[in-house]
Image (cartoon, rainbow, N blue to C red):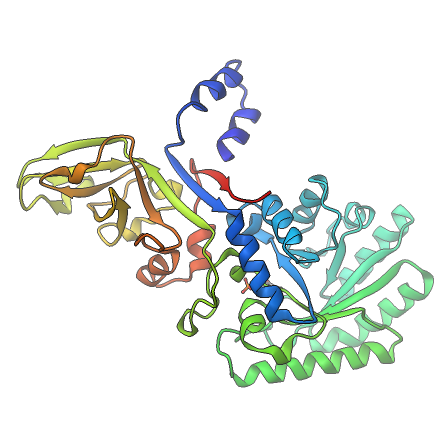
Length: 399
Ligand SMILES: Cc1ncc(COP(=O)(O)O)c(C=O)c1O
């Protein structure tokens, strides 16, 4: 899909012809997204949410799974609203014909809210400056802006700070009275959702409830109150309020891996074809710096996926791929465009053109994004959103 976008926007006279020619062979490196897995995960989250609505979080291009196909799949599977960070992400969904409610919750103070207001995007506000900007936008286009207050209940990141809440409520009440805004909701985001019983969770819940009370005293009655991300949706039923806002679990990655997988199915699988198979003699070094030296005569496979495509250089010599029904160790440094794996003396029956799986659901013994995250001392969110470069995104399953 990314390849198609690249070609479509290319300046070459032969771009169309190139697309036709290249379309005949499978892409060199591919992030395969299983939309059936996304639908399955949404259904699990729907069940956990019970009476609460599900807002599918598709920011950052759907955690790099493709915001539009993920949003359409999630809505078909029972989510009723969408959440993104920026207005441009929200407008991209509208342009794709999605008319479900969409909330965008992070803005600079000089953001142009007018296009979002016209497109019926719900705007999360985090300060009196945001309220002023939204009201100005509503006046300019002569429409009512839909607003949700993002309350900072202890994450101390985005959201209305406690000392500004009263001003936000006063300004919003005035704007609502004159018809330039309509309050849709009040929400907040947890700092320790992945630590099920962390004391801050209850404190954040209480502060949210208190902010809702303050709003009501100003005549601002929210239709929806929400707090839970994936971890809270799956582990803290007491935090459901009117809606939950899961992101990572929808992509099949457990928000609290130490508490299990909750039946979620990872949706992204990172693969590449084998570009070359060759013999390497004992004592020969492989890749830059010769950090790996063949201990015996062996056969290696060259995989066209490098750090520019989302295979972190830090994984050099510390990862395996599933190739030819066995795990093969990565050897030597990860380069910008490629990496080498050892097939052993007999080559393991691997041929040029075969497919190696770098990470996936794990069902066939392939490594998982979680395993990469553990190795890299990071979180799987960063692993899946880090896939990039020449990697082509393709889809399986779905309508
Ligand atoms: C405000 C907000 N709500 C919900 C989510 C979804 O979180 P998660 O992916 O952990 O479910 C995020 C993501 O960080 C977020 O920023």
